[in-house]
Image (cartoon, rainbow, N blue to C red; front, top):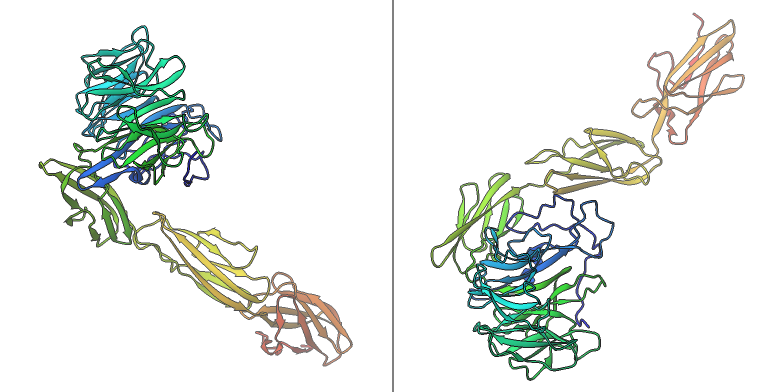
Length: 592
């Protein structure tokens, strides 16, 4: 079983598109639900080793769900595949089993039952078999001149070799020995090919044959299955998958090139289809999905079986190259305001010079320059890598420079009513701000989108509140600000007191109640005394109420005794009357 845990994404049904590649992303015009493709810059980087100018680069087959009529909520059985490398991918939907040319500039793979060779820098591809038969599992020879493959073009499945352009096809062996899924492996000197065979019917073993078709020999004899050989770069060992160490389970093992000295790799690593890195330090392989899904995952281990690392889910058929003939510029960018750091360590090739054009007239050299721009906006940054022979290649990326927005607001409160103003919020280098406001009162418009420049809110009760603003600009940068304030019970007072004679001895009192900002207070109960008793009224929306049929003597008066309202406190010292015929508290009847 697998002996090392590894992280797995929580939502496996999310559509994931390759976004971190120097080349164009995959465009799925047929609404394909890509279930298995992850961002390559991180996943494949973990599967690369580097020593001086030598770099082992990994390719693999990525499985995904092609569902033109709409994807289900969960796709557990991907039905399409494509080839993925750190800087190129095929178009699918039936591409599988990649095999690099030794210099890494070309890659052979199976596409719709044919062998295709593609240029990984230009994407140009050629069908090199072009038959009505089924052609599978290409394997490029280390000397770069031939490709071994399996075909059913004859009366049986057989192992063939051909020139890399598809010419010179030679049948090496069939005779019922070759399995249709056999992935062959070349010895480092390109003289011997190892492959899956069945010398005994029903018993899978590993055999070898000279590349000219002579000297066939059987390397394994165990009753358990032995499959998927891969030759070490020094030619001394062959890694393979075997069932001899665990019932009903393939585990990784290694043996001498003649089939002797078989030993299990690690402490029982469940896996198959191993592939040795070109520097001999790592082995990539297919392993079971820890989530129990039908597609496998790709892992790597050190050559001794230690250090197992998860690389990518829903993938298989790993293949390595040294990339010695490649020249692929690639860089990542990280910007803080107008200062950007660039990193070209992901570039492939034996690179002598890194030259940068930052798109504003500035330039630099080196792998990891830092550049500060004078103004924001979009800049086209170009990296040119030059190898030791003087060959150059340029990669350009548009970098969006962005200063974060400024989040700012003021709060002017009177009693329980506050006026919030966020006109100070701005975006120094863009437009299209999105503003959300949290009024700080539970259940009262928390984190709502606002568009006007200000708003007023009356809080339900005295207390301490924290209001906040969240601002997002058109580049996704965010800024926040908050203020904490304590609100007491607001004051109210009589803002107008009138007394009108309505008959010989009857009067009508009109009382207006205002808050501290001289705004009307509704639903306030006003109690007055008239000398002969008391009466009350309740203010309407304009803050006014009327007491009628008041009987007063010759010099009678009306006195406001109290005002009550659940959200305001009565402050009689603030009473006033703009007409000047009272002090706002007492008014005397006067017959004109």
